Image (spheres, rainbow, N blue to C red):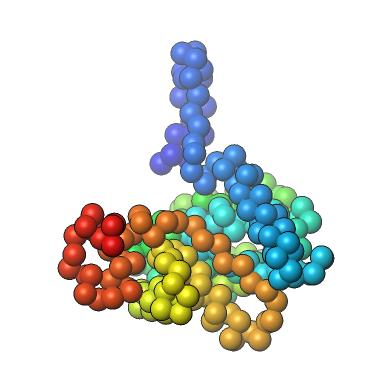
Length: 253
């Protein structure tokens, strides 16, 4: 709906006459993605400064995402020269992105929308994936528009084999609600670190990716929210005794 509003030239002209224009602070705006590139340059510099990696050694990144913005920023960082090997896309149970990376088919048709404990990832139409599609289509805006129109009219599109080859630097995984809670619990018990539900999705996917792939590359998990925003889910994962406690009361705890 917001994108339709932004693309309405008649409305834009009407606004301009009155001295206004629309903007957006969320990840449908490239202006949000551009500064996110710095996260990955900074993370790399920190690993280097801490002696975790050698100069020029590659790292993997795991990003929890539904709208594909933050991980696209990592893709841009990689293309700008930050030594990133794999870009690992972490989904929750709304795993339309996971399925896309497995098959090359983006299919939201007849897919059940699930309300999860990581609500920022509860998305079935990923706004920024079309920016990646544009890149792997050879910056062909007509091909990009054709696929986006298919998604709008039919609820599904499939990329070509040549485009699939452009996804070689990506991997994907997903976490169930139970796995997300288990990760919050286990990481807290092991390290004392309290992670939010979205970060826990990525942490689970990171561990699963390393176990299944045998990839020993240092892996950075992007922590994307504060646990205070999801106090009920986080505290219930740490100890089930908190499940019935009011969320405001849990903030201090």
